[in-house]
Length: 421
Image (cartoon, rainbow, N blue to C red):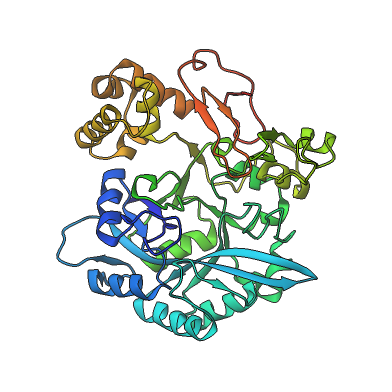
């Protein structure tokens, strides 16, 4: 069976997160999006863990379902943890995604975490011990649990981040590196960029939304062809099984808010080459620029742009339906007309992914009208223009004004795009 899985979300107990990020609302939006498996998020937080135990029940396969509800969506126990510590004479700030096979295993992790730090202050707790110690705790709770470095290239909080990360998995996890089977690529990179590093050849690349509000669910996701079973899904991820791991759903990485280098406060957005010409210094404030994901990948890569891996799981780059409708109507995403049309389309089609992934062009025209259908097809095919994101500012996608004139391939996505400034 095809399973669309989004395994990195947050609850209302995480900072800068919508109060609507509750178990019932996450389930409701997962159905709306067409997501069959979604993370609980934040099981380390006592209040959210209590709601997980109150509202969900085991489904006999390591996953959970809503009590008393006949919904197709299932939950996996997931959490994100932040470790800030010193290693190798540098301060490291690493975020990790944790998968747990049972309430009991998650409870054992939570008991260990509660002895070592404040787990109630934030849904994504901050600890002063190392990523190695975190991995030990995860594996001690259950050999079936898994740790995945989260949004692996984000400058400030990730394993490869330019500001506080490492240059390899081995440098971060030492002898425990053999237990790292996957990386989360994050919104500002995609699998093609990561495959430029031969050291990641045996690492599975997964993609998730890291949603802080319900409408952001599924902006990145994983598509499996397997049973709805925790152990089987972990096996697919561990082995990078291309027969059962069909593809990932990707943001265009240029839209991610750390794709290029720059200084948001100074309005400076640079490509890696421009940063090097500037000596890494902002021309406005004379402070070091925030080195983005594309630059950092290029620094660590031992393969050229455009390298094609024979082990790569396919990737499909999409634009969220709300954004396409908004551009079709030339209105803001939150406008009543756009929200009404989005709701109508999803109701008639069954889910957002049924529209973005599955519907034919003729079906899209009948459902959404010519302009919106054209926008969806252009987004599927990469016929769009993007001003890349930088230093915490999301990139800006334009579809309709440039869609009729495809432009040369960019390094990061392989889509037909044009850089705008």
